Image 1: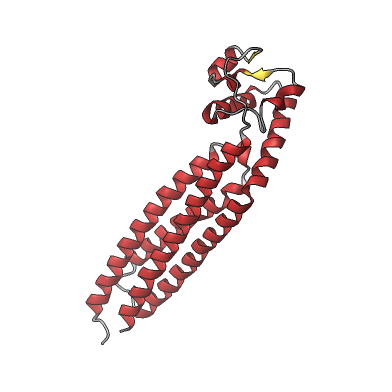
Image 2: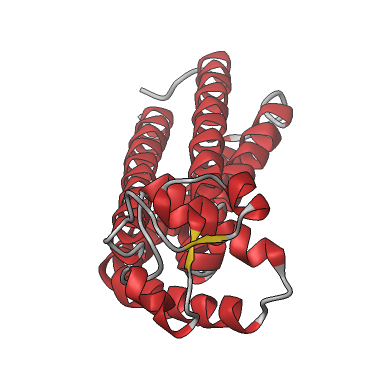
Length: 229
């Protein structure tokens, strides 16, 4: 038995509210994960951020769909609900694509980060007049307790090791850039810990996209099923 007009309007309103809430949550999580990757963009590369950027865009589009659905509910016919459901399915497919894309990035991230870090390390060595690049490396060294890309030997060509490889912060590095005797010199390179950090963030992106797509397609299916019966 088909639902009455008031019943399915109430159902659509409820669905739009829940759909909008899920979009807001998705926006918050994807925005946070994008920030976590963005702060190390010089070392991990921009391509690693693409899946979470797309996921953030889907959250914004989902909010727009929910708002349009809310605005048109009073005059909405059943065909409009079905069309809205199809549009939501398209969003869900794209969100699932974000999951697949993130897993591909996760699988290849070691090579991407190694290449990007090595290029940026060489660029920093060439641009000795650019202090901002050195400060970024200092912050990376202190954050992950590491030195260079593969270890302190990376600085053998320069003849000095950054003071941050001894655990001193960026401000200390600006005042006293280098030191010859460190009591505690980080021996591991930053490639491995940064890779592990980025992989954990990308895995969270993939899981967020998967859960969002599954929840939204489930809710949309129940909504259309109730309207059709």
